[in-house]
Length: 84
Image (cartoon, rainbow, N blue to C red; front, side, top):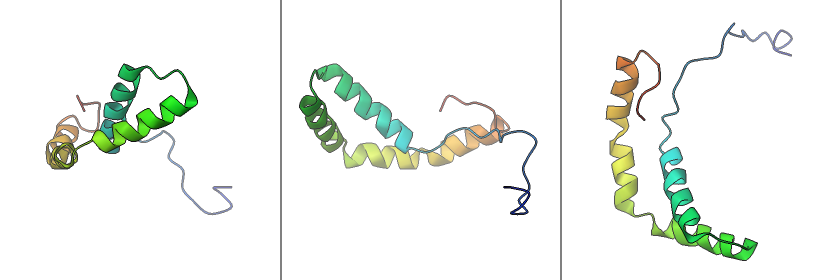
């Protein structure tokens, strides 16, 4: 398919850390949901909605503002893993 579409494929996968701040938001939500220990689907749905609503604009702002620091860490690590 790639050859037919004349797309160049790298011999190895890219070494790029996941810098998407949504991953941090998912982790925050997962912790909040896990702490409530839902036992039914309805409880899980309600806990997801409650956890999402509990994420403050300040939390989102901090994550977005952390991007320059995250990018610098990746540059310094030459694309390798960072603490982010």
